[in-house]
Image (cartoon, rainbow, N blue to C red; front, side):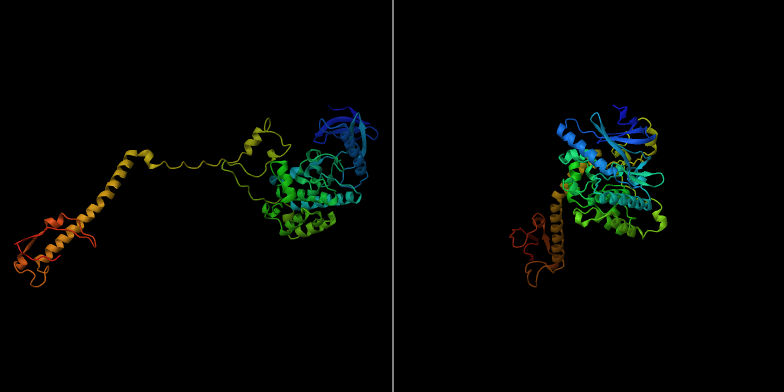
Length: 432
């Protein structure tokens, strides 16, 4: 339900809605200007005492942020409460949030990224000097105007100190941008906001989040215990010095981080100084994302982002233009031979088995035949017996009856074999 008025402000329309509450475009009748009204809403079932404390803290920190006058911080005009609804009236600005430029296809030129981070760092230094911690620096809270000016929105929104981790995550958005000490509920200082700015810088240069995962618990674990991949792993065109800057920004121990935004900007400018001017003025050409077997890119797409429009009316033509080229299916695996010729395979198996069984017999028979022929030749030539070994025979004309030899198996070494031998004429000598 949209209220007609909040305080003196006349509500015109709703322009946004988030976990923290609603945002309305309103008119300030005193000076006839448009303002943005942001309300706070707590989850259903919040205890009354906790809701009252959260509302007070929300107004108290909004008043603190209202004292911040900086060109890169959205100006807060008024705070109030109406019918139990706490609200902030702030400067209405028309621009594009940086989450539109945190994807591989819509990255900004590195020179623009350097300029935006410089403005954000200056605004954070101003707020930290006044004792105000933003606690929710992320691309959706950084707005770029048409003239290139950066504005930090939602400055100083309350974090209920008695809320548990899940409620804190709901109030402040995704934990992907929270510092380790913020997740652990420790005391915060400006270095917590610089950690979050480091996550934003990483995303603006690579199109991916350094601590991304499918579940909040995994994201929290990575923020607390894992170091992200160097940005150059996603964007090889980045100078090596940029890796060192972001590594220091995202240090788990806040004492190792930059003490302020001035030191951060000085190192970042030095890191980008090695790039030629034409490279600074155009977006990085990131390497193509690897495709899955179905042809779907594995990089995070706009449709997968929180708040992205669902596929439906008005998106069909765009989806057809953006449809990836289909990858041809892999050729079918060759069908086993036995599936086509079962009878041929069976015949082949039988033939091989028979050959293995008959081969030893064929070898023995050939060997015996060769030995018989050798003995026959030697007897025929008279070299089969020594001198005087054939007293009753006719010498060269003697023939040996080899029927017994052909029918016997070839003896092996150290084996005894009985063979019946008959000579024609009888009494002929035989050498074995």
